[in-house]
Length: 191
Image (tube, rainbow, N blue to C red):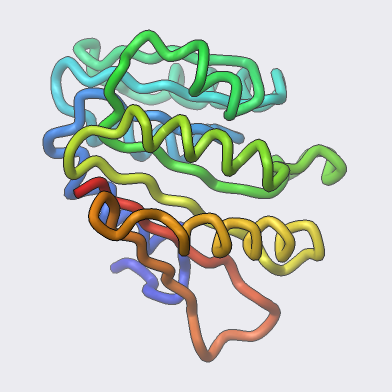
């Protein structure tokens, strides 16, 4: 059962539905590869998944995790070592994205000084929105439990609140009775 107070688990409900038809999926912050593995195991035949991260350590961890699990041979994977804004703007071979995910913050078990930055994240979202298919989805997990994470989340709220309602559905999910500023989820869908 999915814990509805956990943003990372809660978004799986959205991903599971999207993966039934998704042909192009982008994990813009692949980290240690757990989200990418979850998506790869649910990918349909012919699906192309991208794993992007600014840290080579993350790319290696993600590759190792996916190689040690049984991923259908009909599912293709491309890893990109770059900042998510630059990778989405310049390195995706596919021009249309069906599902794009972000898990912001720092790489678990690594240097906490290397952290996603609001302007890079918002630029990556802008690029993703330009490539998003009709009814395509972007999910973003933000971590307001640190000062940097709180700043990034505030920037996201400011940017996402101004997206054109006629073009996008935008939702913000947050636990209400939890302490210590737990992760929050943003969901965008192209209309």
